[in-house]
Length: 113
Length: 113
Image 1 (spheres, each protein chain N blue to C red):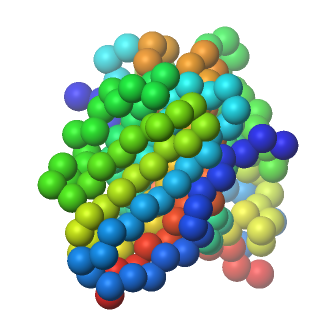
Image 2 (image 1 turned 180 degrees about the vertical axis):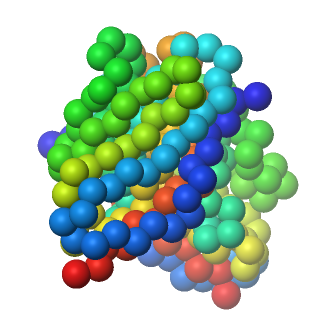
């Protein structure tokens, strides 16, 4: 069965510190992988996507993610967190056919001064 | 900048009333999704359409919820009769069949009293 797991419900980091948000997936076919960010009162915004090719993908706002097939993971990273990065982050997996998506339960990020 | 538009942004009504939420997908996108987000359940897929045809509405309570696409520029989600447990934020998202990533609207925050 297809699924996405975000093991960390909530993470707190200091401003300027590095960040890594974990995402593990279970998918029968070659996955398409995504990270979205949701600020309070807003919809989800796409941060980055992986379809194929280079396993390290760059996204907006200084984020990057690395696809590791052997670990079924697609962790999101940022070298230096800004206070404005405080938000909810969702990992998602899709198929290369059709448009079905599976979202993780989200990780809430708090940034402290 | 193309975006998904949802109306209304907020809706407060009494239980038993009919609620209609509208979504204008990004022009040219042929796939439309409806999600419901609550603190308890997270992000749940209610239904999705491709080329205006419903492909999956298994996540939607059939007795009171209905989703339609009268034309390519409008998707609607109706609840009749509404109940307090329907209180949530409802998101619409659209996607280009060939490009996968979903683009989300800002949501309709629904409160049923």
